[in-house]
Amino acid sequence: MLKPKNTSSSKNRYHGLMYDSLLNGKGDQFLNVVKDCKTLFLEGIATHFSCADKLDTDFTDIQIRRFKECIDYIKKKGLSTPMIHMANSAAILRQKITFSKFLDTEYLMRSGLSAYGIDPIHEDSSKHALKPVITMTAPIVSRKTLMQGLGVGYGRFYRANSAKELAIVAIGYADGLHRRLVERGFALVSGIRAPFLGNFSMDSLAIDVTEVIKQKGFQAAELGSVVTFLGRDGKDEITASLIAKASGTIPFEVLTSIAARVPRVLK
Image (cartoon, rainbow, N blue to C red; front, side, top):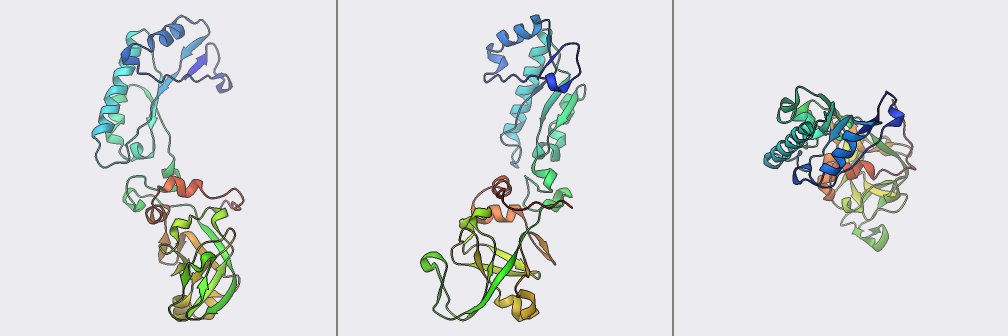
């Protein structure tokens, strides 16, 4: 990060990217320009880990070593790096592998997933005392009994092998739910798992509330009842990590897929 001299205003900061390593000499020209410039000074340097979320830290250790070598090289050129920026959520949770080498420098961190209570390393966020803070819900807008042999959704992808109690919920793939969850995922109704039935539509989907009604009665899955797609309901919980595993992706994609049209309520 470059900042004009004789000012502390963050509005006047500039960022320079070097795509090649300083260690191969290609960064010399950039460093010489900064060193000779009368109006700019090097305020900080940053890097980004590619494998900090992996249990095997070998490559992360290599990145840290190379980054430290770059910093030492910059200092040899007569420049200082007042601030160092490298720790993402995974690195923060593994602070022993990153912080100890930079105790003489102001160390900046950027928490991404962990700021939302999601562990980028383990599926179980409680291992690092993290508590998920995002809940995504939608109401039941229709209820009916699905008779044996009838199909549900586009393509009649699901056909009932026995009579089931079905609920239509006002949420669909346009809201950010992946179709890859069909036949793999479930929602929570009154704390009970309700499997998805058939293909998701743009604005709606069907869930099987047979077990919900069996345990809690028809009033537990009536019109307007809240259905949880992300978050806790009773003793059960659907996490971003759980959805990611079921749909073959990562928690980042699960959260960023939530559409802009979905209302946000801050509590």
